[in-house]
Image (tube, rainbow, N blue to C red; front, side, top):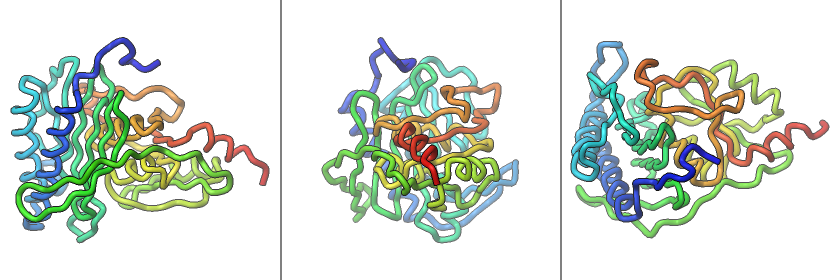
Length: 278
């Protein structure tokens, strides 16, 4: 049983629809932004698209979920007192891909309840897609057409993880941040089909049944993971620590860092496939 057993998830279908619409607006704003870049205090890049997207999402959260604390990558000062329910934003995930002109960047919004992501919405602006997952609701993909400031969203299509194919397990890997520990894990699992990809799009591939596993065995940030965590879980998968424990979100003392994780579609199937004789 998950940590939310016995608790009502705060986001109903009406609120989920409104949050989805706001992520679509933020996604559309990134397409119209100048691809200019400046440097933050830690020398990481920030773009006009980051700032436009963040402004839209912060205003939306203040209107739709007043009083709920929000953590965002681009905040100069992040709240340290969060409460049982809070939001995590990444206004533009995959900045390197975005600046290179790639389509592999996303806009991420997660709602966290009692340390567990229960809603994840991921906009993929350049591909015209929105993915969303909500506890007790399932996971969905929506086509997004952008002809003005307010995008049009198609009817939601249910998505789900697939059964891991024996002999054909597919892994997603970070395009910009490959790490030796993740490569070694896939070697041990005998996963030879590996797809490099930027941003939270990797979680979407697992959730929609195109890939089966996405390991990231190096430190990353909560805003890179939370929305994808909720999406994959809602689609029937799991997100774990490398040793199998649960992730916990809202750790201000750790500067909202996650040491490592593995996103699994059909975890049992992946492990069974790895145990097959050569």
